[in-house]
Figure 1 (cartoon, rainbow, N blue to C red):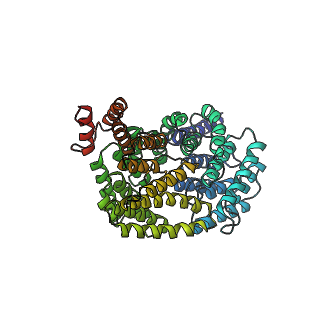
Figure 2 (figure 1 turned 135 degrees about the vertical axis):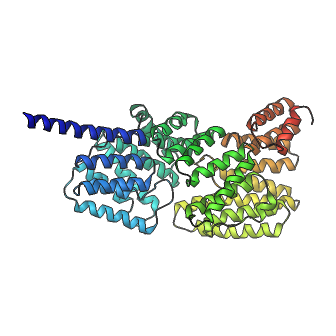
Figure 3 (figure 1 turned 180 degrees about the vertical axis):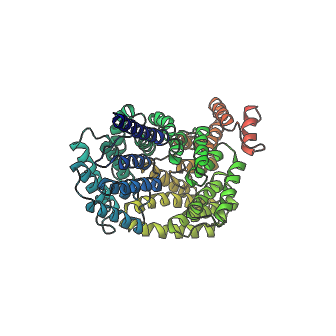
Length: 524
């Protein structure tokens, strides 16, 4: 009797410990259920890894999946998690050594013994992401993986994870240049799950990406408001809501999200990039400069690495472009010799040089960028072809400013009309600053038309710019100026009032603030 009681107490203690452990990571990472054919300890570590995977915490997820495999050597599905932790489907392709590591993990799964058909299907699907690498193009491998995940979702209609990963695969295909209708298809899959699984990090996360990439962000506000609370210890979860907030021009909310992310991880450069961009839109240029200088100091320190250099490259680029500091832009430092990143530097230098009349230097940037476009267009890589389109927009902008300086007004207008058409033709309209390194084409077009005293046309371009990227400082300023010059005093008054609200906490002594307050005070 005493032994029975002790056994019962031990069992109760064990179960309580498991519940506490699960509740502990539930409060940190969210909640998901994917029952696997492994022992209890492996299941717990696997679930933790799954939650981390859904918040793109790749290294943490990998460690959790490896822990699951260590706890239960026969847990083949744990190696699925390890392999998936090497593949960021929405961003850059993993380097060759990580692909090899993923393939190695899947090979380990085969040695782990028998497994249920559903787990075998997951492992086979993951294998499609790497099959034929590097000869088979990424988009084809992503397409095969998506088909495999759709088959699992169809075969196991109660498997929520299959539907969630299938939805993510559609987002990845849209990023590879496939039909943009896939974004809304993913959203349609995820929306019912958002109601059914309110604590699932992947559902909220991927809904944000779907609506952000589609440029239709209003429906994503609920997911943005929920996601950070679902996974409070996940840096990416704190940052992701800002994709919706920044895309809607809600700069204060975007800044708050990214400040939270940086508190969780001070080296999360992606949040720093968004934070710098947000401060620039609010006229808080001194704070933006301070953050860039802080990042530069860290990047130059012994602790600095590739991540800091990438962040420094992006934030310094935005700082020069958004402050219209053309003289400094003409001499923009290069923080990277990688061709696609150096292309950003060439664009900034070229645009800056064109604006200050150094036309030979601007033309040299155009030649270098055009040569890069030719190389990208001939590459057997969809990602690079998509990037070539962005660089074309940048080249047209530089060429237009050069043409304007040479008195070729019609040529300048034609070049900017072409740049705007390319921008409009891109299916994905991600939130700034993820929409591309360059200035919005409609905004640059509007500023050019303002210089030509074509106020009504300029007004139209600024309206189009604000439709794509709401509440951008220079687009709103251009709209206010063009409406005033076009003689629409009532509309100009409204736009200058909006600017006053936007710049409520701007740096003191800003020329733009003086212009806004002066206009509203009747000093015109």
